[in-house]
Length: 99
Image 1 (cartoon, helix red, strand yellow):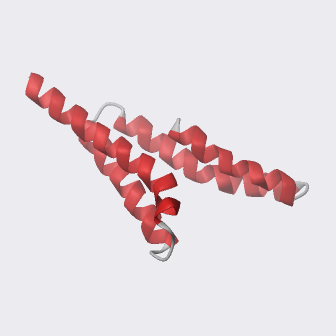
Image 2 (tube, one colour; image 1 turned 90 degrees about the horizontal axis):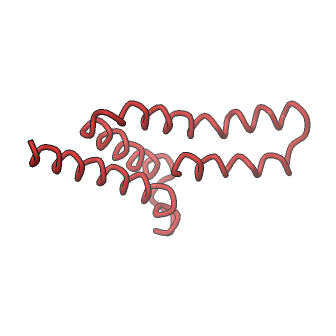
């Protein structure tokens, strides 16, 4: 669902650009969701790796955007990534305890 949410940001390129510009902008917009999807596929079997990947995504987004935005700006993108990282960590703890 998080990857689908990120893909929604590519929809704004259909109103601003024409022709090949639209294709290029959509491909650029979909590069980040593709990286997140790849991270999800890698993390599917390794919970600690998933936790590290999604924590990295959350922190990297804040770093790239800069610290001068309102907190809701970060919560909309970094929040779900951080939550997914926490869920991977919780699943790792649960699996470790059950073994």
